[in-house]
Amino acid sequence: MMENKNVILPKKISLKKHPYLNEAWLQDVIANNTEILGLGDVIVKDKERTQPSGGRLDLLLQDVDSLKRYEMEIQLGKTDESHIIRTIEYWDIERKRYPQYEHCAVIVAEDITSRFLNVISLFNGHIPLIALKVSVYEHEGQYFITFNKILDEVQLGLIDEDEEVKEVTDRSYWLERGTNDTVKIVDEALKLIKEIDPNYELKYNKFYIGLANKGVADNFVIFRPQKRITRMEIRLAKSQETEEYIEENSLELLDYDSRNRTYRINLKAGDVEKYKESLTVLFRKSMGKNDE
Image 1 (cartoon, rainbow, N blue to C red):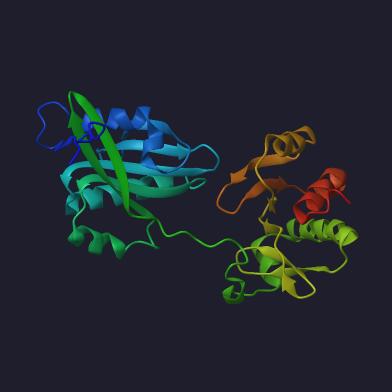
Image 2: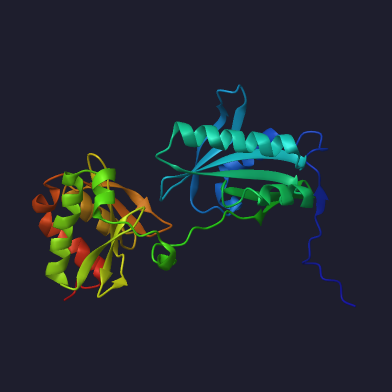
């Protein structure tokens, strides 16, 4: 049998038992190479972040394309109860301090036990949790690191995917949740949309005001009236050209929601009339009618 000299058989090592490859070393490796985590395009927002409880959050990561943050705790060796408590505690602190962001807790450990998975799986869906198993190998003084996602965050469906179970409300619900002025912004936006396609009507749901075309949900744009503004979320592919168009036309762009593939824009009273031409362009583009 011919020997394959191209095969490398590295030796798996334990960071917990290693004389100098410790948690700080792993933390630096992650901070300098965040792509190896498999969490997408994330950057390090903070390291050893001091918490009110007196502890320190190992790493705070932020998604480049959205307002999503990951509170990461690193555990060498096996996972234990104190580790999950600390991870959830830090996640809870950060989400309360910065509610404008979407937050997800991340546990990194060398050995994620079945007992541990049974415990944290009870929280998944209520507390967004990701468990990553880190493995380190050594070969001739070189180290190889892999991260395997053992438990993934429950992914929420896009708008429309579960439309039939959405709790339907009415106009009075949104007048109470917002104001007459902010709900009027939605009416004015609908008027522009109906000039493109007269079949659209508003559809009032508990968490947003959507659209229906001939009775069928078609939420290429949704609205969330608040007390002072109405947040518009319009479904468009992320592009520099679109972002430049929005900003050049003086619309208040918040961010891009990668999960729902929408741009989030704040609208104040009078904005629909003021920016009706640029809003119409965005509506047509989202509807696929921009070339007509």
